[in-house]
Length: 67
Image 1 (cartoon, rainbow, N blue to C red):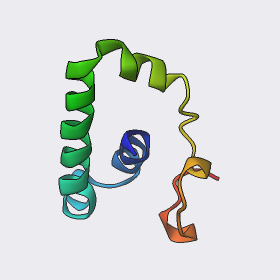
Image 2 (image 1 turned 90 degrees about the vertical axis):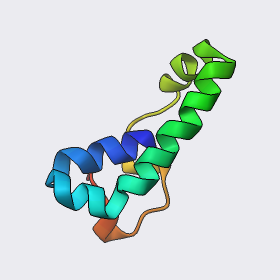
Image 3 (image 1 turned 30 degrees about the horizontal axis):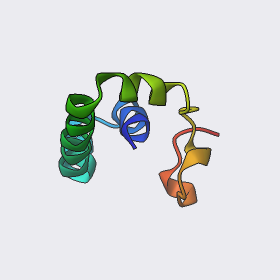
């Protein structure tokens, strides 16, 4: 989800991003921080498993950021 939000941030004006995704992006950051606090290497390892493509999420066509 964090990779998806990062792609959306690059595609949208910041004000529009914050209206649409701001609360969700902040919540994901809080959740990931809790994981990071328990095991600092966990997110480092997880980065290698994320392809950073929309294929990883069940998105509608209008929600896609990559082709």
